[in-house]
Image (tube, rainbow, N blue to C red):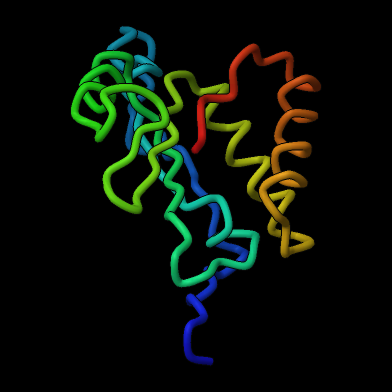
Length: 138
């Protein structure tokens, strides 16, 4: 239909792939979790009813230095991190990233969700997982 945005496949979920990391490298602590990266689309494009004017929410796993750089480069110099219609959700810890991934997966099972119901699910998940901050979204 005209004006509708394409929906993402519901079975597409982010994965942290450590299969290429050798046991020797892990043992030597050459692999630090704060160097792992990943990204996935969340928000109305993943589990809602996006309109032609909807922003694009991208959850990304970044190290603190990259997060600070992205904040400084964003349109308002702070959170929410926006670049036009692109809204970056900066996950500076594996817990934040995995919680967003889990929340997005839960919300994709019964779409559509509006911003209020999605926030409720994500907040409940944050409490269950004992995560202080789930990273900011716009």
